[in-house]
Length: 293
Image 1 (cartoon, one colour):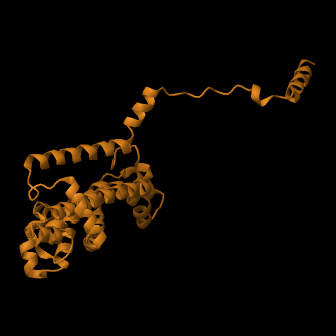
Image 2 (cartoon, rainbow, N blue to C red):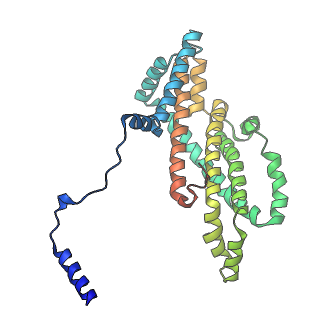
């Protein structure tokens, strides 16, 4: 009887019309002007903007102290030179040439380093044989090979590609080896016990587990190769960003030299942002672990 009355009263209550305006909504947390200002001050884009502003201010101060437009042109003169090079198309022509060489070098280095890294990490005998050779060649700077490369490849586009591929090879190889060696062996053992083929273990366990470390190595390889291309193009190439820097240095046109130098930094920074975004997309499981941050 009691349950019947409770059911009836609940039914009657449910049929009572409810005014939506009378329903209390949870109060939204409001931020004070000081909190809004602090949040704006700590915004990532604003932090980057402040860093660039400090850099330009220091640059302006040094140029005023040196007071020589040839040794240290002002940011305004460099910006004017940048606009002139961009409007003539010369800037983008050299950027495109250097970028093409960089892409070819990264493809070559990745094609060789990543499979070799997996092979070394999964085969102790191969690792014991190849690792001493790698550690022998790794301390040798890519720039040291430029004189020999001039004899072999001559002046042209092949020498910068060789130097960049050489420089990018070692970070990719070592990070691939470390990534594969860091795989939880229990996962591989469990998959083997369940009858998973070796190829499937490699594709579905080893590759995803090592991919965050490989991506970190790829970012380091890109930065190293992008820095090395300038030195290679200064001597062994008739075109590209490095060639343009040397050409305008000989003409004592410092604003254009600095314009190309700043272009190199800007292109490298934007490409690294793109690589970070690609890394987050390819390895979302690595977010929050500190890998590649």
